[in-house]
Image (cartoon, rainbow, N blue to C red; front, side, top):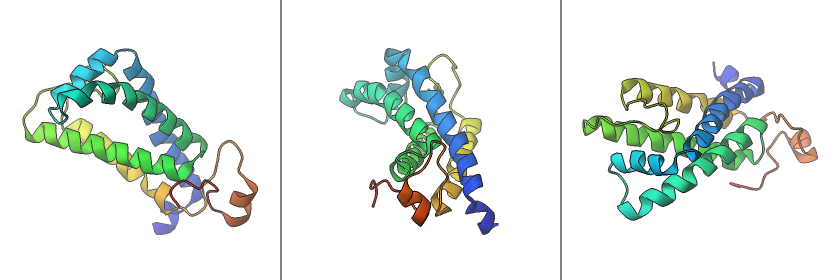
Length: 162
C-alpha cells in the first residue's frame, strides 16, 4: 500500500484531481466577490476588516495553486498551499457544523448554493487524503517537462520550501 502511495503516477493523478478541483473553484468565486464576502462573513470566523481582503485574495490563490499543482510547477509550495487551503476549509466547515450554522459553503462560488454539511466535510476530507501521495512521492512527475536537476536527482528543483 505504501509503495502505491509513493508511485509518481498515482501522485500525478491525485495532483490533477486536487489541483483541478481547486482551480475550478477559483474563477467561480471571482464572478461574485461581494457574494463571496457575504459567504465568508456568514462563517463568523474573521473580523469584519478581513472579510473583503480574503474574498478578493482567495480566488487568485486558488487559481495559481491549482495550476501549479496540476502542472508540477513550484510543487513544494503549491502542495503546501493546497494542503493548507483544504485544511482551512475543513476547519471552517467543522466550525459551521458545530455551531449549527445553516449557511452556503461557498466552495465553488455563490452560484452553487451548496449548504455546509456532512457531504461537504467528507468531500474535503477526501481531497485532503488525496494529497497523501503528493507528499510521500520523492519523484513527482511534471506535466510540462522537468528540469535537468529534477531528472538527475528525482527532486523538485524549486527552492520554495527548502
